Amino acid sequence: MSESTRMLIGLIVGIAVMVVLVSKTKVHTFIALMIASGITGIIGGMPFVNVTQEDGTTITGLVTAIQDGFGNTLKSTGIIIGLGVMMGGILEKSGAAEKMAYSFIKAVGKKKEEWALAITGWFIAIPVFADSAIVIFAPLCKAISKVTGKSLIGLALAMAAGLQLTHCLVPPTPGPTTAASMLGADVGQMIICGSLVSIPMLIVAVFYCQSIGKKIYQIPTDDGGFERKEFKQEYIKSMEELDRMIGQKKLPGLGVSIAPIIVPLILILANTIVGMMGQSISILAFLGSPIVALSIGTLIAIYGLMAKDPTKEVLHVMDDAIKSTGIIMLITGAGGSLGNVIKVSGVGDALGEVVMKMPLPAILLPFIIAALMRIALGSATVAITTAASLSASLIGAISVSPLLMAVSCCVGAISFSYFNDSGFWVWNGMFGVTELKDQVRCKTAISLIMAGVGIIELLVLSMFIH
Image (tube, rainbow, N blue to C red; front, side, top):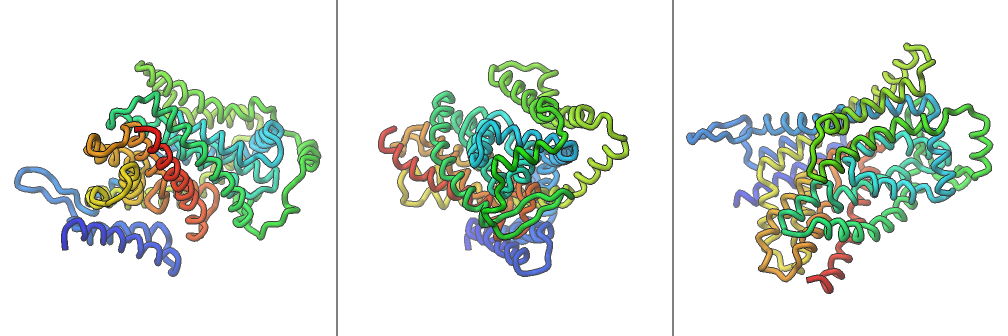
């Protein structure tokens, strides 16, 4: 058996064992992910601990790979999740989230909430990291669900679809920017082409979100939990009911309600724009980092919305909000461990070798490489970068323009959000999706649907762009 075959078998067996443990036993998802990481690494041929070779180089061991994957994932998401849920607790308790939701619905019109959230996510993910945006907008999604009676699942998934598309397709986000650079495509053309390609994908995604919201009908409760029941049309409130309900409540003003969300977004966006211009302003880089920006947003929420409330009550609100994040962080970190074990073991390279030998339409080769990298490595950005580096060797050998090759890498990276993707667990945790079959029907299914639309677009575009 070749080394590449053994690595691929390790990945397949590890994922299969994890699925069985989560769906058929009492083993917790966190433990199942750690077991899957161990199985994948052992079968893939990784040493148990670091090994120093004669030439002085070190082969990373399984234990180190698991620890590094866990730590690196939480390094980028843990603090953001903690700050986000504390800010969310303040927004919900003060009535600010409800005020935003009502104003949002009045602006876009009733029955268009999924479309509005999807478009919002589409724009926001261009300057803001997608996982951060999920946390920032979670209170708004929950409030819209409460106010309208619509399923939180459909609303939040529509937002996530928009976030995922521009995160993977439109510069200046790291993945598409790197793909354009590696393959020699013009970044301006990449922005235009990536944006246009994402629109049909977003349209199809929203229709799916509206459908799944009725099949998985779940709404947030006043105690911070979630209630799931069978969907009935009578649960959806009319505009008249909303007006009457809101009129009976004393809510904060729109400006002070939206400031905790808008200010961090402006800081992050400003830092991104300055970076695109080739400039560097240290104070802006500091204030525009997601951790600092969200800290500022949380402080604005505390002193803008609950300044007159007793200190103990404010602290109690934040304590209650953060209680639910422990398991979210554990599972997110474990997903990072699995992704890192797969990366270190060399499964990604093995998959790339297999794809390069496949008799497929030329435009789909970068797509397939990126899709398999996404399955193997979890991170869309890493999948795009890896696919672009492998696809660069095909330039000149296949009759596909560098621009379309770059777009193909990006579309492929959208295709499979599942157990080793940190965003998969952040979304499931923030919106109370705990059943494995529901997790697959939401984040995994929507990514496959969008990628399926993308394949059709790539095949059509390849007829006209060479």
